[in-house]
Length: 359
Image (cartoon, rainbow, N blue to C red; front, side, top):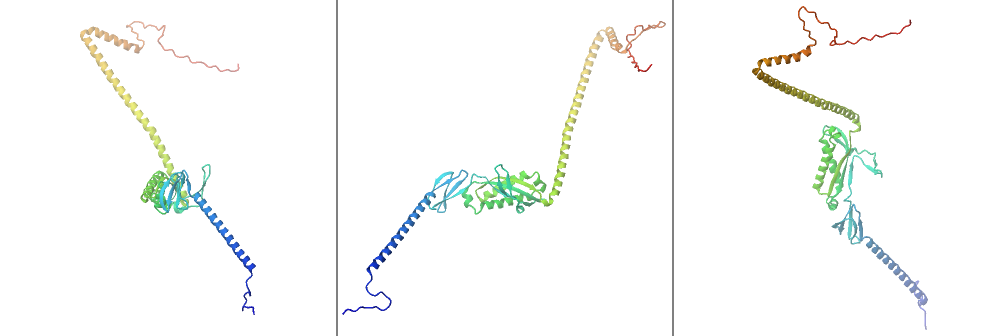
C-alpha cells in the first residue's frame, strides 16, 4: 500500500519540476557569460590605455631655450639638449625642463603686470615699501627700486643643490642692496653713486651665489628709480635745485677761467716775444753801429781830412732835409723876395654857404 509523505513545514512537496530546473540553469549560464564579456572588455580597454600612455610617455621635446634633466627612479641620469628625445615610459623616466638660455629677473619695489608688443609695460599700483625703503649712511630715508637679471648656468645644481634657489637669490639681493646703500650718503645714491652701487651689488650677489653653489649666474643689477619718500620730496627737490644751481655757477666760473687763462697766457707770450725781438734788434743794431764805427775809425786813421769832410757832408745831407727852407744872407744885403713861394703849405679855402631869401 503506497502512502504519500507530506513533510512538515513550507517546503515543496513531491519531486522537483524538470522544466523549471532547466530554465534556471540557462539563466545562470547566461548571466555568467555576460559578466565574462564585460571583464574582457574592461581588460582590453585597460591594456589599450596602457599602450597609449606608454607611447605618449616614451618621447618628449626640449625647446631651444631649455635643457631637460632626466631622472630614472628619482636619480638623475643626464641632461639633454634641445630637440626630440626618447625615454622609458610608465613613469620610470621623468623629465624636468629648466630654462637655461632665458634671462630671468626679480623685481624689487615694483611689479610688472604685463608688457605690450610695442615694449610698453604696465606696472602694479601697489607700493612695496617693505622692499624699497632703505636707510642711507647719513640717516636719510630713500626709496630704491631695482631689478636683478640672472640665468641658470647649471640645471642640476639649480634643482637639487638647495631647496628654494630663487627665494635665496631674492633674500641675498635685498640684503646686499640694503648694506651698500646704508654705507653711502643719500646725495650720492640719488646722483653719482648709481653706477657704483650696481657694480658692487652684482659682484657681491654673484660671490654669495657661488658660495652656495646654486647654479645661478647674475647678468646685471639695474636700479630703476631712486627717489626720496613722498613725505620729504619737496625738501629733496629744494636741495637738488640748490645743488644744480651750485653746479651751474661752478661750470660758469670754470668756463670763465678757461677763457681768461689762455688769453692771459697768450698776452704774456706775446709780450715776451716782443721783448725778445726788441732785445735782439737792439743788440744787432749796437753790433752794427760798433762795426760801422770801427770801419770809420780805420778809414779816419788812414786819411783824416778826407774822412772828416765826408762825415761833415753826410751829416749835412741827413740833417738839412729835415730843417726845411734855409736862406743864407750876408749882412747889409736885401733879403730875397718869395715870388714863387712853392714850399709854403697851402691852406684850404673855407667854403661860403649861401642862404636863399626873398629880395
